[in-house]
Image (tube, rainbow, N blue to C red; front, side, top):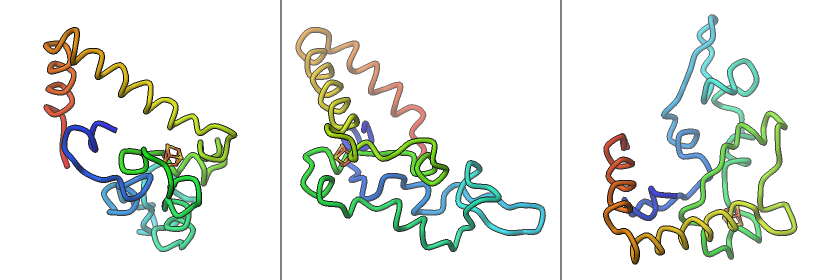
Length: 127
Ligand code: SF4
């Protein structure tokens, strides 16, 4: 979320590491996998990776938070949990709303603390 708010980068997909192949790992046969969580289960060329990682569904397309929204698609692929938008109320959208509200509150009441939060985030920013 801070990517979108502080750096101005749109989150076109749920996981940019997956789509930009930033976390590729290899097994002992030299097969490539998109991330360590998917090692041995979903190879890099599996079309389901792109299908799962895009926001091309009716709810996300209309959502005000779509450009800041991220999600670990490995969780969905590994069936650990489902997408938050599939619930009656998207849990991610509720959390984004709450977080932005709290950040704006800090802007009014304790700008120094807000600057520290953002500085800490940016100090470890790598892409
Ligand atoms: S907050 Fe929920 S509805 Fe909005 S883009 Fe993210 S997953 Fe989709």
